Length: 95
Image 1 (cartoon, one colour):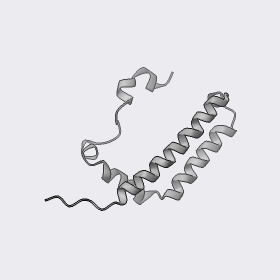
Image 2 (spheres, helix red, strand yellow):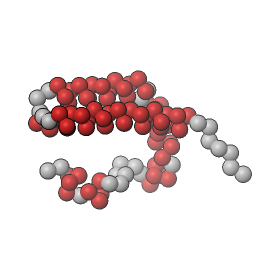
Image 3 (cartoon, rainbow, N blue to C red):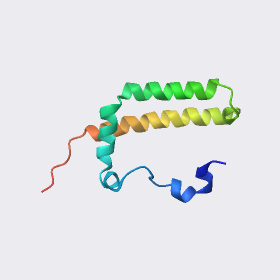
């Protein structure tokens, strides 16, 4: 059993962000993309997916589970693309 199963209420919210980061999540996003480029995200996801699905492990024995991880990686990649667009938009001027 995973710790996520034991404490779903805890793991259903941000757990790694500081209070300052919770108040300014765009700073976290911008910092991430200063360190990691989109091509690297794609490469990491591809490698993780390949290892997960081509090495013997019982987590992905069923086709349904393999399909779920493929879909998750695709959705995560799209989310990363959207985050890049959001983080590169100029900050609106407030008066």
